[in-house]
Image (cartoon, rainbow over all chains, first blue to last red; front, side, top):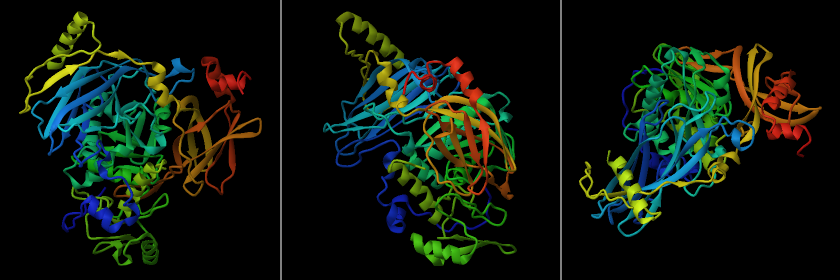
Length: 406
Length: 188
């Protein structure tokens, strides 16, 4: 990441307007409401749900909160469907232990909130200390005053310490749909957050930092840089891993427990508390990147680094960035002609191609500039994916919707 | 607190009427909301383990999780462990990727292409090429393997890794695993 001293050139365009206006190839992609809910308009309630805290490896009370909105008929009822049980390594079900957890001793119940006055917006919450080795799933059903119902996606999360270190701990996992049917893992981007060795055994500090980063990146509709991931978080499974990573600059190692957890992931974010310049693989999935939790904008850092290790995007800032791409979509080029050619064939304006340079230094690399703040270039909360990086990220979600993110 | 009270009342009510549906009236419960709420929590019902875990287990495959230490063009197997994992999506074998192939008695069993993680970007520094690095990968293994070959890019030669002892150790510890049963001829 790099703080680039540029003037703010006006607000970034809104997601939908941008998609409709600039990237007709992506207009078929599901609307951003995927995140948590669903049917909006036509009298159906809009439903959102979240648990808090997202994950802690110690005993604690979790609160599942659901909010439903329907301005015309109001909300008459919210039902939180909960399934809870003990997280296991699945070995009791077939012999081979699994890094993705199973659940035993499960029970299911509902918590209903009825609203006799049919308010336009209503909230229903359920709290419980689910204990250690807990694995909880929930989905929410909301009913309008006219009897129209909407159902949220099912989310699964872990509570307390896990049964074994080498098991992936779900933070925000689309384990199954609301009917219990499987959701292919290939339709999701599995992103794992793991603590660096510099947390010195303080896992609770790591989970606190991870929550801050995740809240700021995936549950943040108010800041421009987070709007894409917040809108499309329905395409992410978020996990936590055990200690075992040791990163410093681009040097990074993992121990055997952590290797098991991250091997099937699409990306690994190594969260560190000591200060060093973050580093990421340039990979279209399957890579790793570090995120400095001590920075006030650690959520923005995740966004930028994930551009490298989840989407294969290069830096666009001058003059000491990493100018390379991985995968099929590009955002940096070795010449103006390459940039213009790629622009022409991929629906961008070739005249947006500019060299990555400042007043004193030219890199000889080129990018597409639409005049807006770019997350791969501008370290500010007002940045967003623009032009080519935006198309690349949104194309990833389109791939997810088609059945395979990578 | 409201929830705990509600659940206690719910259980008492259930015992009295013998109903599966539990109504716990919290009435216009004490809440910060500006509208009245009636809350109730149903009695927990058991869930079949098969039904509960089926959607997950159907998507998991036995995999050999390999930890590889790469120095220049040399690949060393640091550790190999068999676990159930989600299948890793296939990638095109091209620059910046490495290919792992699992073999048994000379027969190709499975193939996996993963990023080689050689090219990195460090903020404020630029591109960083890691000639020495660690890569982990989950290679699907429907049966025991004896060899894994690794190719660091399409133009590079294959390197062989002997993985027999990994499966011997695993099958001693988890003889019920389908990987081991297939190996012993119990399943085809």
